[in-house]
Length: 108
Image (cartoon, rainbow, N blue to C red; front, side, top):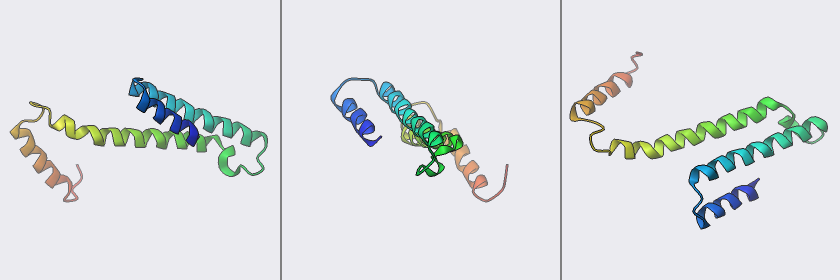
């Protein structure tokens, strides 16, 4: 699996393939490896441990997607806030008051 991911990174650095295509290839490649491992574990559970349970595979995929989305939002949020006209001065004042309200432990 590591070799597959390294190969995708190298291809991404040396070619002009769009990043979305590489992301989809990484997702499908990782998922394929997990499901193949699961099918082998179901056939012969000796030495596979928890890999024989499909909910483990779906949990791994869910965590992969969640972390990817979280990192993407974190990396792009600063650029969104710098966009001219996205936030006004009045919006910034509201955000300050909302944060004070939320961080004092008062539930909405």
